[in-house]
Every structure is written in structure tokens, then in C-alpha cells.
Length: 121
Image (tube, rainbow, N blue to C red; front, side, top):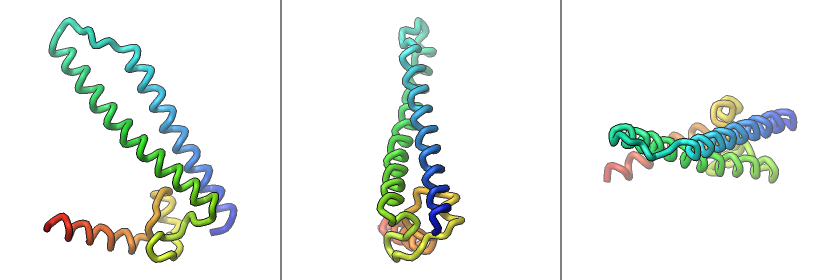
């Protein structure tokens, strides 16, 4: 991967990270504004369910931010874009679709086959 491509992915990851952080801040603000002191039990239950769903989504995004940070670290140390298993380059098409990818398509497919085999045990 040439330096221009690496910078493209670095900027893409930084933008994605910032979007996730902005959404997280918006969620916190809206949760602070909402009140659970609903007079109707149905309304309160609905609000609590919505909050639980929102918090699960934010938790997934928190984990995604950690993966983005790891990808940015790989860019910094020069290992970004290389498969952790085969050490072969990951295709640009795969990185475009999943910029946090650590495995080539072939290695990912092999990993998923192994997971299925062990899950069936």
C-alpha cells in the first residue's frame, strides 16, 4: 500500500471514530434530559426498554472504537493492511469495506469455518 492509500484509510478511520464519539455524546445528553419518572407504567417500561437497547448499541460502538484505535496503531507502526495470520497484504477492496480488518478474506473465511466446527461440538 502506498503512503497516499495509508493516509486515506487513516482519515477514514479518524472520521468513523469521531462519528461514533459524537453519537455517544448525543446519547448521553438525551438520556440526561429524559426522565424515568413517567406516571404511566407502560410508558416507563417502554422508556427503560429503549434505554437498554441504546446502551447495548453504545457498548458495541465502544468496542468498535477500540478496534478503530487498534487499526490506527497498526497504521502508526506500519503493520496496517497485512493479515495477522498469513502476513500477506489484505486487499484494498476488503479494507474499504471493513477498514478495521486484521485478516485477509481467506484467513477470515478459515477462521469462521473453525468457529462453526467448534460451535457444533
